[in-house]
Length: 215
Image 1 (cartoon, rainbow, N blue to C red):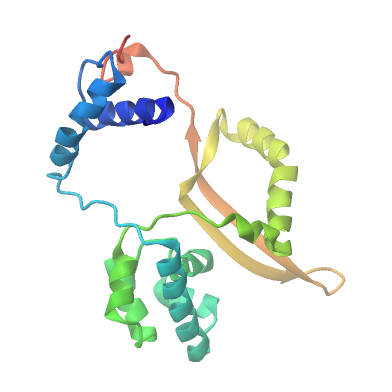
Image 2 (image 1 turned 135 degrees about the vertical axis):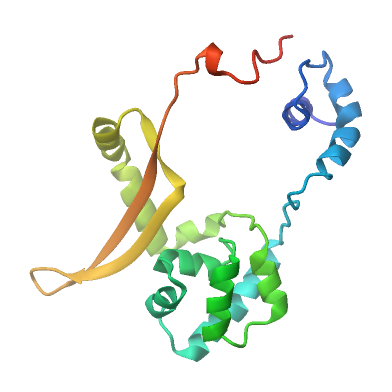
């Protein structure tokens, strides 16, 4: 049988997708209606999410990184040609960002050997995420440690300067650079530039869908 938590989650998804006004008293009832709602959703004009498996993304990334290596171009150079941040450019090659039409034209002009198959895959909405194994890399872990160590201070400063809310990681720019310190040492500069998203006060009068389901 299907776990109760799965039934609950599916019922909620079906409710949101169909925008119904009433909630079925039984999760089984929600499951029974799921095929109809799924077929209705397929009529939408927006293309369904196409997800590539991890191995497919890894293989595509390997091919793209090889082309980049063979070209001799740096990430900063490619980013400049594409008009993107260097971090977002890396994300494109790693399968963590969608290739937009205008950017595709620029990319094919500088990396002419990219296959049409890889370009087609890059046009799709990616399944964003990461493998937990990368946290074992000293550099990745140290960056993660810095964010968590300073996390409370960062939150306090954002709250004081912007209010009660969070920094978006969607309307967001990330740039990685370097500078020279006073002792002549090379130093890393990572810049986060994210839109501030305030928490809203959930006033009933502003809830366009009206009261939620009641059991």
